[in-house]
Length: 203
Image (cartoon, rainbow, N blue to C red; front, side, top):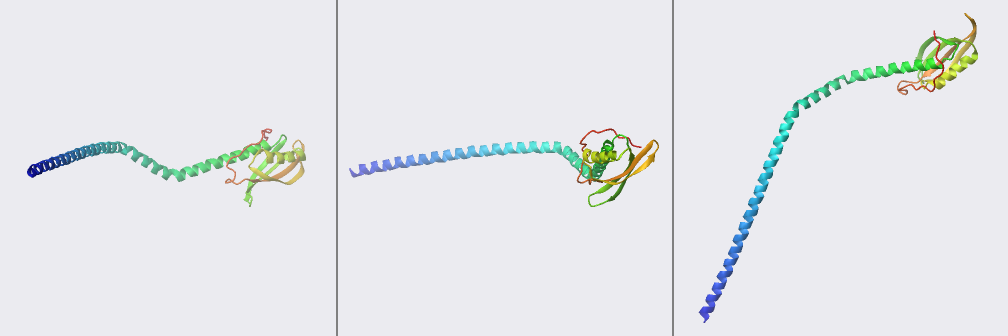
């Protein structure tokens, strides 16, 4: 009876070991399948990345002449920048003096004539514009000073240097001399007329 029990126990042990072995084989097979699938996925992704990289390289090769042209243009622009800055500054300065004279033309009232305009040395406040002229009365001189101060932001600190009675071609006149500080170029980028006024009559 003991032998029969021993045989049954061994048979049960063999069945248990067989199940364990099949389980291990199944696990190894599943692991192998997962590994192969992962390797296939990685291989596919590597191939896709290589294809994308090849496409990018082809695109870079196609864009290389354009990039070279852009770099050449940037280099030429950098070389021309000092000249362009000089031309732009000259244009701004020319426009500035045009606006200064335009403001002066608008500031001169009727029956007032300018006979001379000159620039004096630069002081602490800026260069000084000297104006001489004739008019019919002292009131016209005051009006010229007022309009010069109000109509253009270029002029500041308008001073009367002298007035004197004189004899003109058509009667008595008043000769005068004015001086006005011109705003420095760095502080006054553009003139701005503040009114229209009468048209100038200059000789």
